[in-house]
Image (cartoon, rainbow, N blue to C red; front, top):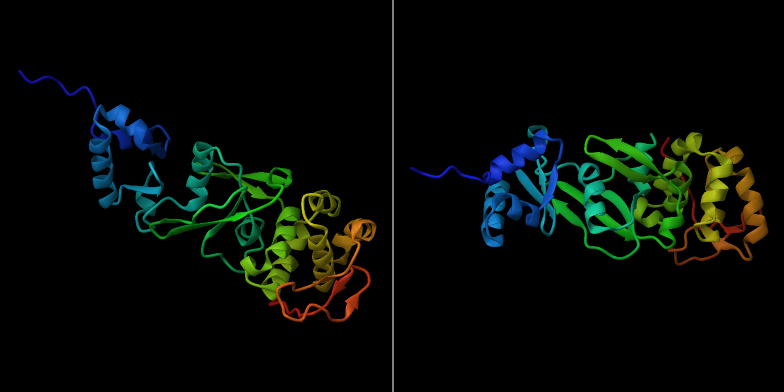
Length: 267
């Protein structure tokens, strides 16, 4: 008489997790649940991955792919990032064009989820899902908020923090013209007082450039308290486009900005 199997198969294990509302696990968790060696567990999980049932966005971490995302080859990044960052114990938040999209300023969908960390990390390529990581100084001081997803709460920058990051990382956000266009759509979500609070976690030059751009897109009212903040703290003028060879141009005295680039919005 054959003994009854006491451990599930890899497929049964994945299905049991999904039925309980869990869509990610580690290879060590699978090894324990399956009652097999490390190599045997990895082989079993890789077979499921080849069948399109699992994907691995990071080493030793697997996600279960529901039928509606099989064509993507992974869970959408915003659905696996919350649990992945928790497992890796990494403070993070989503910002730039990705956060702007969540705030309704979806002028251009980014090709990858844009995530800030405290240290460098290689991008994630999981099926057709992409995540890019960037380093943000004083990350834990940046105001963030939660966004509910089907798999957990995603941390994203507030509208005010998003605006500052867009200016600070304008080359990673498509350039000044796109940044100005997004700001014109994001402005209605910006709280002027919260903008000043968010500015404390950013270099003063970001506030200078942002104030100028908000006025440029007819959102001067949103920048009034920020103007007082800049007046009290900015010691010297900064170029609007710091990456350009021409560092100086007409000087905007209100924001202490050298206007060394023409800015056009696509609205």
